[in-house]
Image (cartoon, rainbow, N blue to C red; front, side):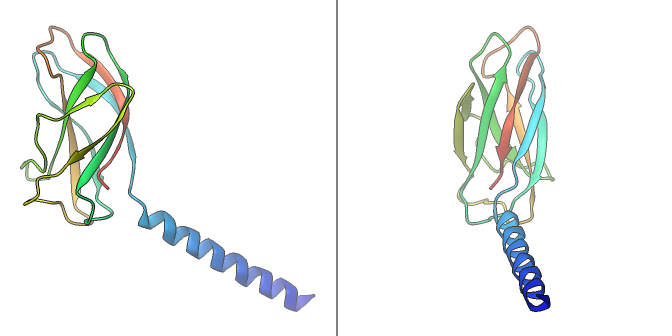
Length: 136
């Protein structure tokens, strides 16, 4: 019986270690919510560290968007403020979108990447937005 318990604990520990390694190998996903300012002012809405530098895009899902528009402009920048992707890509409400990074400036693994959002059209009021994203 003692041998069985030792083997079971060893098996459980191995399974737990493999599960933890699998989780850390996956991209970090973050939820966000906030208000986009009127008059097309962008909002730095979320910052997440990259987990896989070989992926050439970030993924964003807009789950809720206030009235007046059906999409947002979405792009990323580094901590020094330079853009990692074009500020003219749009992510539609209710959809998941992959947006490519600039080919010559792919953020490295562990690098913090900031998600910026903006209204694609001139708005006279703020617009609520929520969703999730991963810098991959």
